[in-house]
Length: 234
Image 1: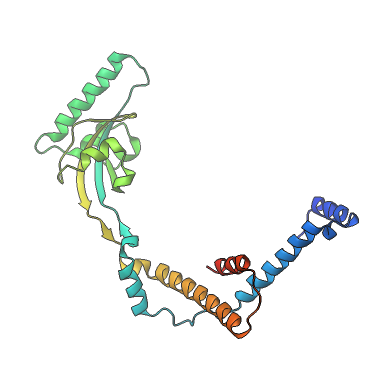
Image 2 (image 1 turned 180 degrees about the horizontal axis):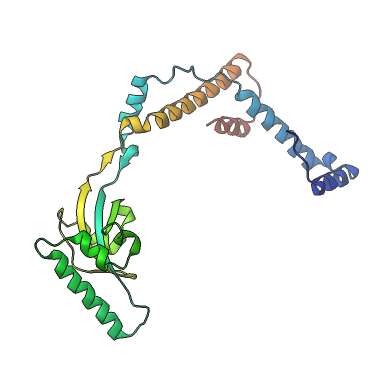
């Protein structure tokens, strides 16, 4: 595939060539640096990658155990809700009526033998969850709005809350179930860990190669430039 160069770019390059712009000292230095960087990046990338057998199952498991805190899934909650929207009007009477409706629904939902799902389908004003019997599915603590999260944290499974007011309206929430904080299974993150270990090993190979070159053929080196070269392979 041949990449088409924009006419505007060609026009500018032609004009720069006429003025011998590449011969300006600052431009020449930038060209030299860009050429060096391109050669370095291309050549160092040719340093052999780790063998396909790397990492082994034991190495992956060891990395998983050491970095377990990085694979943690936070505590999760499965909730149902009945939602009463905040009236569009700022009329205190309309707000009071909506608040009373939410309180009445909460009392009904808390009554022994109450069918929370049926109540949500019939009365909740959040259409998407109402169609699912109020089911909001599994969510992490961070995904729950603060007003609801603060109350849910102290609830027992099956418990129904009093109306919780948010900027959007009133939420009557039932805690269906919880999952404690736990690590993602090794099988789920195996490929992610393998890729991380291969990348790290490739970087180590490149840095070791550079060190061997300097050992074999010591040269006068600009320390700042050498630091930049090492950093570029991290």
